[in-house]
Length: 407
Image (cartoon, rainbow, N blue to C red; front, side, top):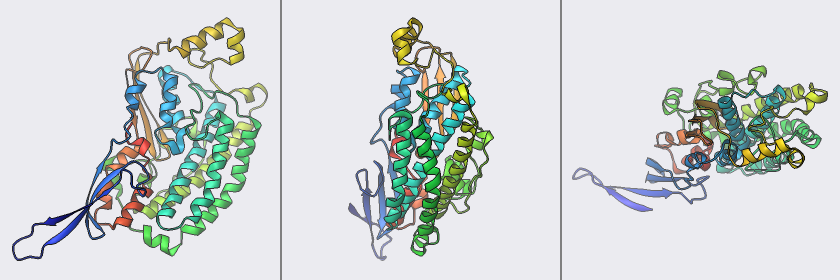
């Protein structure tokens, strides 16, 4: 922190401002961000964001890896909803390879992605509560993020960085425990979400802290390239699941919650409503999955031996399976040449993968479109003129995830 004296015309009173280095290790910044703030007392005159503290060269690493080895890299983008990153990458690969997944795979993916969306929004909104001085809601809903993580464990064995699914489907079928825990979540979470809303939505202190805090218009949001809840809070009803459906999303009925002011309060309300819509989608997907009987109920991946690892027992007993296993693991299969862009509706907005293949064994070029990287560019504009404490809530309500900054 340092003081600066602003030179004013002769005879006028000298005014003093303060430069505050907010981050990259400040506990209020929700990640490894740095904001150099110019303050007049508690009011922000200007802000300069810097990124790059956790740059991990994901895109360059990915250009030296076969397709299936890139999945664990995507976990580390938005780690609050890693399965959506994983599925988005798999769908991108399938688009390049011309793979059509079975319907049951699509529905299972939808269930996992919507659970991930709830887990992400649940954390974002409860943390907004913490930043306005209310800790109870965070502790209450965290139990249900834990239940979602237990479902991940049943599906793939992991919790945070999930590496869930494979190109063409899943590595294993969902077991009965996974379905039972999903049913439990659908039974219990609506009541908890309702109580969470009752704690905050019409809470006078919460409303005074968030209404009018960090607003952005729909036009400015579009100019910056906003997508997802932060764009919808500003009044623009763009949702990738509706405008360019993937994974059979066109078969599901759900609404797109839209705000009007684009402030912290609207962002909070939109994410809350999106959790209700995700519950609707999961219920529909569960119903569709239950309609599969007999052998159809055992389908969990597409038939693509060139890219889908064979079962371990087959590797030990069948020569063909051993050969495919070796070729996939050693990255010895050339992918078709081509150029594809595939996006999914991540918890924070449009998560896109731009993949160029020259027909080799690894991508020629791969770019991740990370929604948080786009949001962060607008931080100065929406925090300028606000109080320092409001800047923290604004940062929180944008749900900036440091992992998406520096791919």
